[in-house]
Length: 440
Image (cartoon, rainbow, N blue to C red):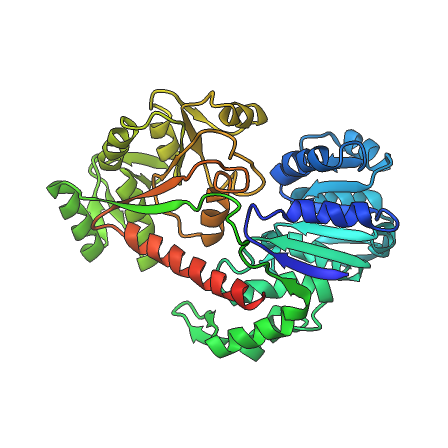
């Protein structure tokens, strides 16, 4: 069996895989690859919850010494979990060298991946969107052998966070390029419309007809389960909090957007050399600070004051998401605020021991279960452009087991690019949702 289960977060993908393992005529020797949080927290907890004592689970991560890892992989197990950063180490330390090649950078050892193919009956890649970049080392480490394992299951709630092109690597890990082509170049040649960029590169757009064609080619190996008759958890409320800037800030934003240059408090001039850089700087300015030459310049407290007023009316735990490091430093000054980064932090959060949780979507977008607290309010201090992180981070709280309806508020400064970023993220979310609907 080789299949992609593209189901929204909280719909029981881990339990489904465990059911398949436990009901198989012979328990398959399984390799699980995902993020550190998923490997260390989600899967062990789900195994203990549903099949205590019935599945032997071991895992390796960067927290262990090489000696400890070697001891772990020699133990008997049903499932061996590893985070993506361990792939290279595992291949080099558990397979023999098939041959060597000599390059200008030195000797390169090529390991016998057939040993991996023979070693495992089942490969599970949880959060397969981690491999969407076909040029990444993690994808290249899997490309030659993943699809050759007898059974492959890939899981994702966000299979096409950017556009339909993201699905190519996912399907390649299942079929080795049979359906969508042997390379991303072939895929683009067959389905994409290249748009020339000033830097000499192309970006690629996909028509609705091309998208539908791609989806039709992969439908036989993909499942997207329709929404259940009754909701698994209360649907969250998404709110835009549009904040009006003071006159001075409004004028600063307007001038910088027009002139691409502004004078900072120390007299230095900050220049944006492209529209992309301009948008990035204005995103920072909207949060109240800006980076320039390894320094942080404070500009305003507009969003922070608005957030303080909102928090004054809330008595239940609140989760606040931050984008920039200066956001984190600012938010941690709030009374009762605590950074959520360790296992103990997450446990305390779920037991309502933390009044204000501060979390980064870039470090905790996958694998955390934060739905057990009484939290009913989440605030994005700044909007995020990354649709995958938007979906996955919200789903840490808004998932099966959540008892409350959660309001997700996004702070948007008028006159900046905040609202543009938010709407772009939502448009990508809708496009992905439509794609999943077509795979039912």
